[in-house]
Image 1 (cartoon, one colour):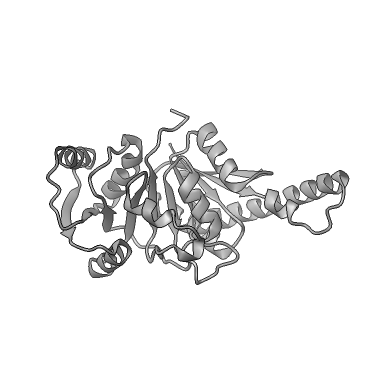
Image 2 (cartoon, helix red, strand yellow):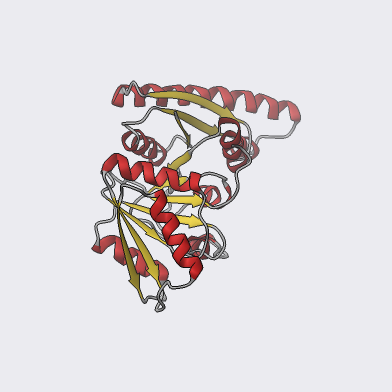
Length: 284
């Protein structure tokens, strides 16, 4: 059974991400874990002056969160009514990234799905602050859905890579299963004026091909120094439905995420972004 964590701030963008997950994994037996982390709501309340008030507000906030989670669960069940899907509700007093990572480890989760932006929905930001933190620090593949994005089966998947890092089999498994479910084509995009001829690059390309067996693969090379523009142009020109990037040292995604301030992040995904975390997991 696939386990999917869906953080929500009860915004329309968060619900749109939940709907996307239900449609993307409609053929697979899945447990959808709806998570609301509410510590920030408690600590930012201007009326807090004592421990008693904090405890009271925590109790009230948790009760309200559980009610809203139940309402979302009923709504998504009525909309899709998929017997392959079960729903688990979690209201947690804690930091979002910490609570997501805790669930990733305790549930041995396969994927986190959330909107690129939440309630603030600042259109100037391609990726909101909470989603950016999850993309950078959660030890699990993260699928970020752009605001107002309407679901469509992922027929073309873009995977930019320099073929320099060894990928984790578990991370690639998610991509392969999605591609096989929808008979998708995976486009590897190598951005360099030099050919990928080193022994390491050849070995990593062969490894990728082995993991993506029975999947149509195309390898593209572009001499483009502005990686963000090259990726965005490729998405438009090739009708890409899903962008896959890897969060690890010396990768294109790291270059974009490690910008000093959020408003300088160059990546404004027009399609869902699946970020693979190329780190060892605490769970098995």
